[in-house]
Image 1: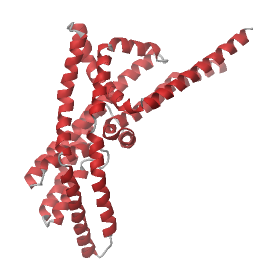
Image 2: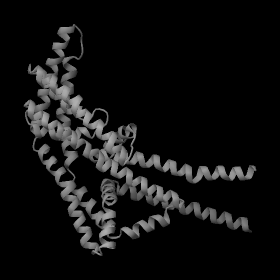
Image 3: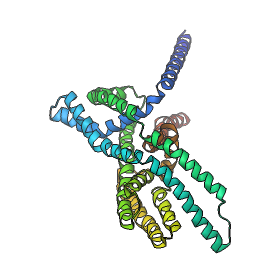
Image 4: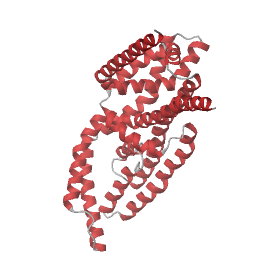
Length: 348
């Protein structure tokens, strides 16, 4: 009789789990477009929740006014610089398209000079033209996808408001219902906090430092539209492997094509020697202290993030892969270790 009851309970449990999963899938596919807003709200919540708790619990501020003030502060500190960068680059779309053709012509000239000097074939004109056409066609799409985020920002702050106001209840509920041991729940919270800070703060700050250093060099060397290239350097600096080289290498090619050889040489030396050093130094100092994210996680995270979320995926992509790896470690600690202990007890 007891076995029948257990079997019935197991069938009911499996049916209930299947029902939950089906509803979860339906909700996920219907609300998928809001996923970047949810991730953005979670990121801002992780950065702001300690200040929120301090002001409301220690200083006895009202929750509503505190949440609104913190949201305004985040807009000024985070979104205002991003908005200025968006305005700078979006107003230069036509210049970027024109600049892409200039870059193609410059690349042709540099390649032809090298081929003539060393009697080798590097790239055909047809391949270079195709490269230029793809760049010119993709620039407006990239800029549009990158900065057309008004709706996303609205929903980020809409979700963030309720997360801040109900922060304690939300965290207690997660602590209560996450089916893990207390030590693993605490570990999950701490490591998610480290990952968010490392990706959401560390990566943009390192890229900004590179862009500022790059801007100084652009001004000294007389680069046309130096603030446009400052914005390009900032965005490129967030990309793994190639990074800010996507800005200063094309500039060097343009200098060489214009027979400004010493400017081109200085641009390359300054780029790889100074701008690149800023990236390496800050990654091995600041980012290593905040959260030591493996370079491969950043590389594949950016690839996944850009495909899923567009430009904002530069931050969320590495975060998702880091979270996936963390969950695997917690699963191993929560279940695999427990099963080994049970087997050891049985065998002994």
